Image 1 (tube, rainbow, N blue to C red):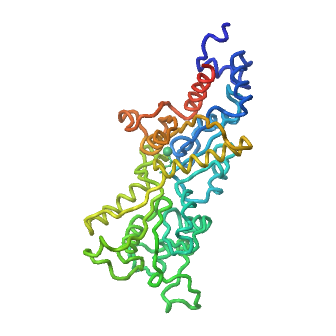
Image 2 (cartoon, helix red, strand yellow):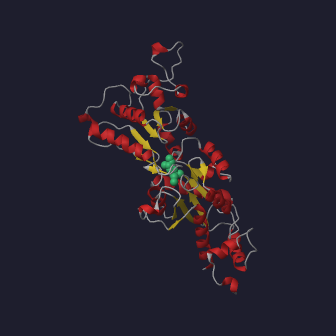
Image 3 (cartoon, rainbow, N blue to C red):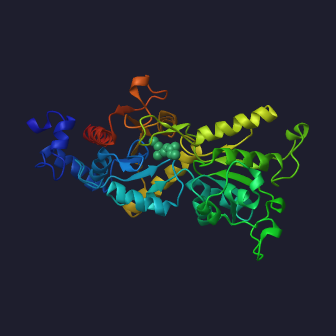
Length: 390
Ligand code: G3P
Ligand code: MG
């Protein structure tokens, strides 16, 4: 019975499919999984600081994702989704890039980015003029239009409409080319009105992705709010502010910092939000109410749970009767770990991103802390095999 003595991780991985001759015990476990035609676990992976850093994939990422394709002791495909607070382009475009970078096929049905959840609120604003922020030039407008927002404008549109809105930035050629505005009537040789912000009441401000020009964006958000949506119109009197109807302000990513390929974490969209609120408070004495999406919000984890359930049904070819154990692998305790814990998932914290063990224990306790995503995947599979065995 030697082969049953213990299922130490090393023995299991030594006997994983296509790595070594299959031991009696692993064959039994594989049979378990196979007969159940389902994996006892599923993963949700964060991206920045877990799978990639800046423009490059982390080596452990490609190895980890390959294990999920079937080369694991369970001998089954292990389902997974990707949940990032990043964004800035369409889900399709990002999945094509990630597929190339990670060398595994990443489908839009298994991918959630910070602003994907806005698909669920389009109806509220579909025909309304909205300001969309973040990303380069008009990439975010195109994403918003792809979601169904029919009148989405950027802060570059506002600056092209009237450069005096922010005199400290002159539009570059590519920025100007990306705008869809009506220069002041008198400026246009031929008349192709697209928008005149002095006649276009902005109903909502949607910060999809990390803004590129914080100063311009803070100015325009402040103008829209204080002028009740009509840029350039008189500001709300401070005494009226509390009673006046509020323009919806939505942020899709609360991260103060995130990990790219620089040695230290970089300021994120959450830092932009705080910068705006600091300016707003210096004028009004209060911060402006806003709707927050993105990890760790419940809205985003509920959205992710639905995406994962649909993905499982897609893989299993039918409704999911028994939910697998879900493992969230993340590098940021403030977004990945606290959110997964609150969603009742298992959470694994890696040391390849924002979280720095030198800086002391994480603010939110994960189920497990490991070096990188490959170790995370192996640890979770071992744990589920222990459960299957017991
Ligand atoms: O801008 C993206 C960043 O805030 C974090 O991305 O993939 O670590 O959730 P991610
Ligand atoms: Mg991350």
